[in-house]
Structures are given as C-alpha cells and as structure tokens.
Amino acid sequence: MSTEVAPEPVRSRRFKFNWVDGFLWFLRVAALIAIVVGVVGSIQQFADGEGPSAAAWRDLIVSSISTGSMYGLIALGYSMVYGVLGFINFAHGEVFMSGTMVGLISATMLFENGFWDSNPWISILVVLVVAMITSTLVAVAIERVAYRPLRGAPRLIPLITSIGVSFFVQYSFAGLFGVAIRNYPPAPSQLSGNVDILGIPIAGTRLLVIGVAVVSMIGLWYFVTQTKTGSAMRAVAEDKEIAGLMGIDVDKTIVTTFAVGGAMAGVAGLLWALLFRGVDFLTGFLPGIKAFTAAVLGGIGNMPGAMLGGVLLGLFEGVGPQLVLAGLGIPAVSQLKDAVAFAALVLVLIFRPTGLLGERLGSEDRV
Amino acid sequence: MSDRTPVLAFRDVNTHYGAVHILKDANIEIYAGEMVCLLGGNASGKTTTLKTILGYVPPTTGHVELDGENVNGWSTAQRVANGVTMVPENRRLFKRMTVRENLEIGAYLRHGEDLSEDYDRVFDLFPRVKERLAQKAGTLSGGEQQMVAMGRALMARPKVLLMDEPSMGLAPKLVAQNFEIIDRINKAGTTVFVVEQNANMALSIADRGYVLQTGRIVLDDTAEALMANPQMREAYLGDI
Ligand SMILES: Nc1ncnc2c1ncn2[C@@H]1O[C@H](COP(=O)(O)OP(=O)(O)OP(=O)(O)O)[C@@H](O)[C@H]1O
Ligand SMILES: [Mg+2]
Image (cartoon, rainbow over all chains, first blue to last red):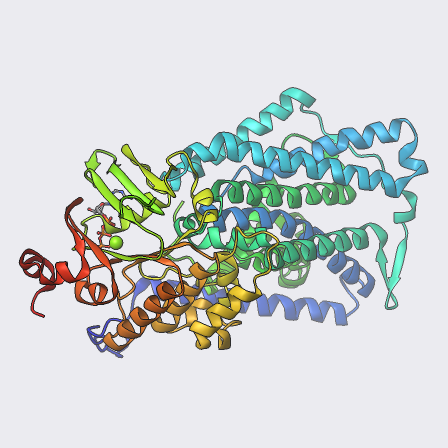
C-alpha cells in the first residue's frame, strides 16, 4: 500500500554453490533413486510371483488406510491447537490414551454382564461415547490447568509444559489402572468377516474404522466451516486480539478447540480398540508421535492436511516397507515400519518444508 | 450539553501497560449523534483509548461510562453487545476467511436476529463488498479491505462506532472517500468516535475534537475552534 517501497534489489542469477543446499539436493536425489529402485524391485518380484500376493497387497493397503485414518483423527487435535495457540500440545497423545483406557473399562463392564455379545452395536456406541467424553474432559482440563496460565508466554514454555503434562497423565493412569496391558473384549462376530465393497472384500473392522473416521471428519468439517462457533475458532486462530475486540470470547473459543480436538482423539480411541485391542498407560505415546508426524506431514494448522497426513503416514508405514524396502532386498521389512514412518516425515520435509497442504508457518501467529 | 447523558464517557481514566503510564486523567464525553475526533501523534495513546472503551485495557483508576452507567466490570463482549464496535487500525481483517465470513463475525453477538437489513446497509454503502463476498479477505486491495472492515463493524449495528486511523495507508483520494462515508454513517444516526493523525481530514467532518499528547488530553473544543487554534495549528496541522 505504501507508495515508497524500495525496489527489490536485483538478485544475482549466477549459480553459487552452497553446501547445505547441495547436501539437501543430494538427499533428495538419493531418496528418489532409492524409492524408484525399491518400487521397481518389488514390482519385479510381484511379476515373478514372489513376495505378497495381490490379495495380501490389498489387505495391506486397506489396513494401512484404516490405521492412517486413526492417526488422522488424532492429528486434527495437534493441528487445531497449533492453529489457535501456536504450539505443539505433546500431551495430546495422552488425551487419546485416556479415551481408550476409560473406554476399556466401560467395554469390560459391558462384556462381563453379557451385553457386549447380545448388543454389539450399542456396546460400541457406548464405548465411543465414553471415550469421547473422557478425552474431551481431559483435553479441556489440561488447557484450563496447564496452558491457560501460560497465555502470552513465549511458546516454548507451553511446549515444554505439554511434555510434563504428558508424563503426568501417563503416570496418573498407571497409578489408577496399573501398568499391565489390558485387552478390549473381542470385536463383535459380525465384524470378523469380510464385506464386499464394489466387489472388493474388505475386513469388517477396517471398514467400520474407516467409516467412523470419515463420518467424524465430515462432522468436524461442518462444525468448523458452517457454524458460528467454527467461524469464531478460525477467527481466533488468525487474530486473537481483533477476535476479542469483535466480542468473541477468546478463552471460551480456545476451550472449544481443545474440546473438539479431544473428542476426535476419543473417536480415535475407539478405533484403536477395534484395530489393536491392547491398551496400557503408554498407548498414547507412539500413536501420538505418529499423529504429530501426520499433522506436520499434512501441514500443521491445516485440518484437511492433518487427515491427509494421517492416511499417508498409515500408507507409508504400512505399505512402504513392503513396497520399497523389500524391493531393495532388505529382510524382515515389516519390523521397520516405525523407521519408515519417520523417514517419510524427514523426506516430506526435505521436499516440502511446510508440509503437503501447509501454507503458513509465518511470524504472524502468537501464543 | 451537560443536561444530557453522554452515550460514552471517560471519567478521570488512567491506564498503564505494566509500569508505563499511558492515559493520564482522561475525561471524554460523547453525545448521541455526534461525530467526535481524537487527534494525536504517534504513541500518544489513541489506540489505547479505544481499547479502554472496549474493555480490552482496564483503567487503573477512573471509569468508562456507557449511557451513564459505569461499565468497568463489563467484558468486551458485553460492551459490543451494547452497541460499541471498532474498526481497527490497519483494518486487521481475518485474511484467511471470506468477506462474507468477516461480515458474519461482525454480527457474532447478534444471535438469531435477521441480518438482511444490515447486509443491505453495508452493500448500499459499499457496493464493491457485495461483489467480493466469496473472496478471501486477504486478497482484497487496501481500499476494499477498509470497506470490509467498516462493513464488519456495521454488522454489529453499533450505536457508537469507533474508528482507529481510517486514513492510514490509503491514497489521498481513498481517504477522502472514506471520510465521506464515515460522514454518511454519522448522518444516518450512528455516533462516531474517530481517532486520527490526519487532523485536517478529521476536523473537516467532526463536530468536536480532543487532542491527545503523550496520554494527556491537552485540548478539547469544537472542530472550528480547533482548526483556528494557533496551538493546534503549530502542533498538529502543519501547513494548511
Ligand atoms: N500491549 C502493550 N504493552 C505495552 N505497551 C504498549 C502496549 N500497547 C501499546 N503500548 C504503548 O503505549 C503507548 C501508546 O500506544 P497506542 O497504541 O495507544 O498509541 P497510538 O496513539 O495509537 O499510536 P499510533 O498512532 O502509532 O497508532 C505506546 O508507547 C506503546 O508503545
Ligand atoms: Mg494507534
């Protein structure tokens, strides 16, 4: 707008070698070559009739997508809190864990009096509601107790606090419920078979997981883009001061953000139960870190990005080892899935530092 | 004037940021239907005055009155709901939201009311805004952003409209247009309190003015008197 902007100095177009850029380019090229060689190797193996069958590949992809959509739901919480407060809430994995843990208690009760077997769908719904309520309450409590007093502090402070909160919640649950791994009752028998979707048989549990994730995502999308509270959330994320001066209750809106992120983590808690059954006080750690990775992958602060990042991360860690590493002749690849997941993060950040759909890592956001 | 109740008043207001004393014993009275300006140089406390009116900065002593009532205990939202809204310095739109969403945020506290009349009023004042409803506010030109910022404030159907330096960053032609629109809004019945460094422009449409110097109100008179005041001419107007 100002009329006196100095003209941009004309940049020298001459190529100047820079060691960091050179190294990054080396990494990019090496990664691409490794991926291409690996994929070609796998296709070769498949053509030769070695390695997994077509059906095995299909199951691998479906299970990766279902795990990925669970990551995506957790990732939303990281992304929304980052959008509104500008820091990573590392305690969000524990918000997820508390949902599954308390959900487990309700599931066990339902199982012991036989309701789980006689009314499986209602039981799942009950566990879903319990997990969502628990995660929502835990998320809101964390915001109120740990983060609100830090409003306005440099964002490193709440970040470090979140790590402390994470340990606090983990060991509170260890104290309350013990440290042993406990299992959800087996999924209802109706889910154990395959369901045909367009002629493709898909495991019932996986399908339910994907379905629940999609419905939650649509619900959240509607809430954020079509409701007044959702608009207020986006306004607060963008400019807290002006949002406040327009009459929006900023603190209340921040609580809402935590609550919604918590509810999504609660849904993910049910999905975890359906997929893996086993739960303990450390259950939140690895999915939490992976969901954080997914949020960064998709572009932190961006909600569709979080979901996309989750599904992609699920695919990377599920399909990647078999597709790329096996083709490179590396043995026992499925044990490398965590390594692949985080390598994928590094790769995406090397190619696209803002994440896939990320636009803003600007200086405009304040805590 | 003193037999009427001012719609907005400061009574011996002092404000601090930490230990820094900003407003010093400020007394302001604005009556319904008036257009009043607050003039002052950089960092004199103009924006702070507006934030104090909205309760974003609490007075350390003294109080703010709306319609004669002490509102020190009121939240910003309560004050906005009672008809005080602001067009912020530099417009400060929600850039990632659409123009329509920005207008909706302006009406945030008007639950369940019919807003069509308010939209019509905004579109009538700023036909351009209507064409841009679906556009992201961040992609608008500076002049258009100013229109949306004013539209956003009007959507709250304010009794008192606070404007923080509406001329800032705009070309002279746009500034003149802007003030003409402010004048129209005022003539249509909205009380306007406009903060400006551009004293000439502000005084040309205002009824009265206050002059702020490092947090203290040093002059307080009708617009004509201020225009003619030699002290004023020296300090703020430069060469007319
Ligand atoms: N949040 C804050 N914390 C500390 N000091 C502040 C804060 N906001 C403003 N100040 C200080 O208060 C003084 C008055 O600021 P204010 O924004 O009210 O000035 P202004 O008259 O609006 O100036 P300008 O014309 O530049 O907008 C300035 O010295 C400023 O640095
Ligand atoms: Mg100012």
